[in-house]
Length: 191
Image 1: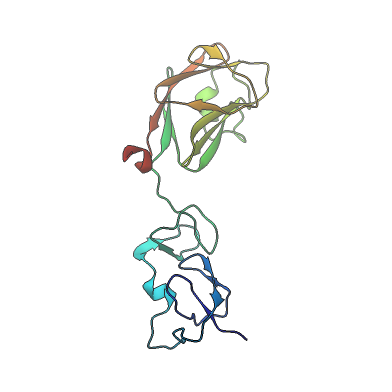
Image 2: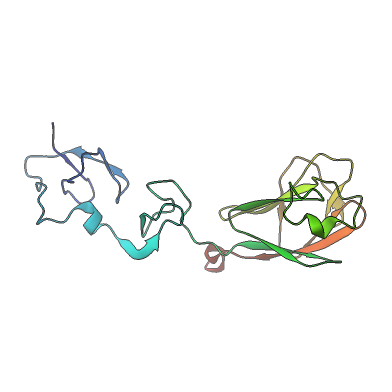
């Protein structure tokens, strides 16, 4: 079997893979002068920049400094503080955090916040979905229903994602009204 090295570190890995996981690069054939694998020589996993405290929240594998996704399970690693807080005119507010998609309506099997809509008979059982995507922002996706959905007083089309901004007003049917407060992600705050 041909010897393989990581093109970033020029070190031969002790694993049998064809992919250097710490550097996210395909291993390449080793030239004659390549450093051989040896326990005394650091492997890529020892030389790649990583944060010993940073681990994938899903599988627990170490997360390297420049990784956005976990190399083992593919989970999103960037910590995001993006959140959308729905503040109804009549009722208790609720917050949806980054990476979550939540149904809104009177059906408790569809919406964890169904109790917030019980007094509003013209809010559909499955009225809309609120999506908080850490990379793209906050969207409201109305379900196709006979009860309309409004954003800032304008009726919006069903089955289409509508981008929400901080302090947008949403209305379901003719009576449920709420202001959506959006907490920006860490990435947005540093731009």
